[in-house]
Amino acid sequence: GPELAQPEDLMETLELLKERGRFTLLITHFGYHKDRESNAETLLRFIRGHDIRMPVIVFASGEYREVNRPLVLGLGALAYTDTWPELFMHLDRFVSEEKGIA
Image (cartoon, rainbow, N blue to C red; front, side):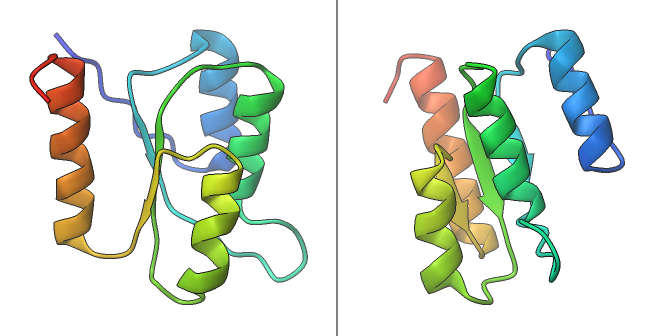
């Protein structure tokens, strides 16, 4: 069956990606930092830099949506959302496409 990984932090996530190469789907938070790029930016740049083909959904607080959403989509995220209904909509669409019923 499907495997679920819940890394504790960004570094553990990057290590898992180095070991596994990819997951079916990755959901992450934006992870703003005042003194460096966000966790989502670091993660998406890592994925792109290692040519990992994997959909990523960024689930965020909604603060600075007008800046953060285009940023992560430009880095290759499948979606950026800040509401539960929208997150479930993206998950439903993803599962339907994976099963070929979209």
